[in-house]
Amino acid sequence: MTRYITWRLLQSVPLVFGITVIVFLLVNAIPGSPIRNDSASRGGAVDVERTRELLGLDDPLFTRYFTWIGNVLTGDLGNSYVTHRPVLEEITTRLPSTLSLAAASLLLALVLSVVLGVIAAVRANSIVDHSVGVVSVIGISMPSFWLGLILIMIFSVELNVLPVGGDGPVTGEGGPFASLPYLILPTIAAALSQVAAWTRFVRGQMLEALSCDYVRTARAKGLPEWVVVGKHALRNSMLPMVTLVGLSLPNFFSGALLVEVIFARAGIGRLAYDSAVARDYPVVMGTVLFASVMVVIGNLLADVVSSVVDPRVRVS
Image (cartoon, rainbow, N blue to C red):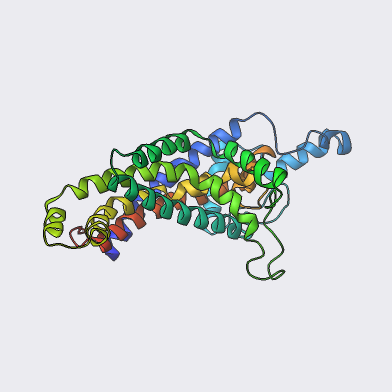
């Protein structure tokens, strides 16, 4: 297993390298400059040119990229052009907010999709099944940012039962659950699209499992229906779901970008958005590198967990 994981990580190096090259070129192709336009009016054009030279913005693109990638290999992601703080510090500061939102939305999506998918499969072609299908289509078609705005209008503006946005009180103030109300609406907005997609997937896998011979044998033995569905059918249909969850793991981080902007959460998604607007190239590249690593980890976890859950899956 160790040899397999090492080989997969080595295979992922060209992927991450290619992603950073493409994003670096796209970021630098955007009109504008990280140096504010009003810098010329305050300090003059000479100071602007001096600042560009100091930041290395006058160097050719390939020189700037290989300088950046060389620093990354030593653990240095550079400093922000806006806050002048290390990029790694900026990311680690915002990471808890993004992790809490991603974990909560992943848990909610997983629980709801499994429950709804099993119910739809057990009651196939019934009103319940058709209702779940309609809700799933609506959920897939509904953008997370639009849903976030609707949730704010209903629960924050009209009913005034949940906060509009933010991350809640500072750590240590108000108890361990003080920030929980601030997490409810963003979690729902980030999880709904995955719930809709995963529900249809679980339903399909359950229908296939319920038609297998071992399920007919279990029913012929007189086992209770909840044992047949839960222990036999559901357990054997969850292996593809493990792979799907692993591959979808990066979506909870990339999808958090719009949700964090809508709900004003101080997470990595909001950091990436603000940095792109400000042309803060080092922070943009740092967040892209983080997202790329999450893709690699998600794929790797999906393969490893699949081999652990199902003994029939063997890693060569």
